[in-house]
Image 1 (cartoon, helix red, strand yellow):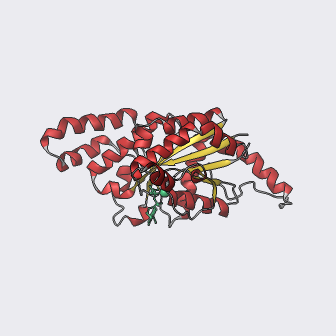
Image 2 (cartoon, helix red, strand yellow; image 1 turned 90 degrees about the horizontal axis):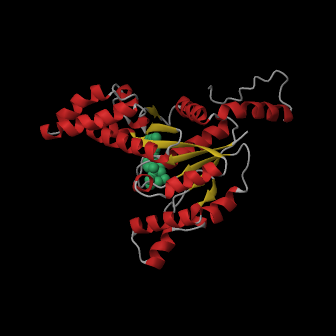
Image 3 (cartoon, protein in one colour; image 1 turned 180 degrees about the vertical axis):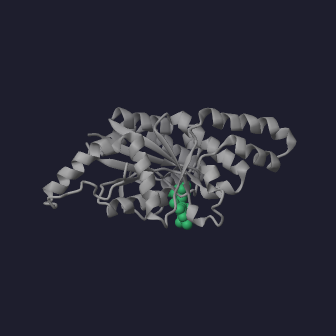
Length: 281
Ligand SMILES: Nc1nc2c(ncn2[C@@H]2O[C@H](COP(=O)(O)OP(=O)(O)OP(=O)(O)O)[C@@H](O)[C@H]2O)c(=O)[nH]1
Ligand SMILES: [Mg+2]
């Protein structure tokens, strides 16, 4: 048995909260328990029921008003405040959760929080020490694949978060339903630098050739940057993603006996198939 969590991160507006809501609805549909946590002190409203909310600790609005800070400085202050209060606030709140609980943390969109500051590293270390198996879910807007240079930048950001947080990691290409032309989608789900490099060269000046080569080499060397497509109009899409995340944190191994026990406890049919509609992993 264990405690499981997803840390949903990615650039501003890339669809993190929408993913969290879609995942919550999917889990409701397959009768799988999941709690969504808001970690964005600037959030105003959510579509999902919020089980735990950073704004109960600190809100951006109050910080901006009381400390006369702008939105970015205010957000950094809030996140550093969270880092200082991990034990006192988060530790206490998480006492209400235990074995078999599954949390999804909907994070703010400023990528410097993952790459430059220590707050998320402290946050995941705290969760790990508290016994949670955590998977980072890095969201990138599918719009990024319309321009190879933009995609390279997005993939490198995902790679930086992967290296910095050192956790099981799944990358998601969100908003795939909005792509008009899906013919080249596959090229970006498993990006092959050798394939992308000529396109990159065509869209940048010759003096960037060496830099482009070095960046492509970096992605190639790690060969860890692959993306799963999220099409919110296709239910299989979120089921596949959840299945991959389950694999990454080995959720299925612990969950199967529990689902069967639950089904029996609820007087399920004798011939229970144990599947419960869950992801096929
Ligand atoms: N069609 C479509 N729209 C999406 C999808 N994901 C997000 N959106 C839209 O994109 C906008 C931003 O989505 P959010 O889920 O708020 O993005 P976010 O990453 O949580 O944004 P921040 O928390 O501000 O960084 C909203 O208008 C969403 O409705 C998607 O998969 N498909
Ligand atoms: Mg959001």
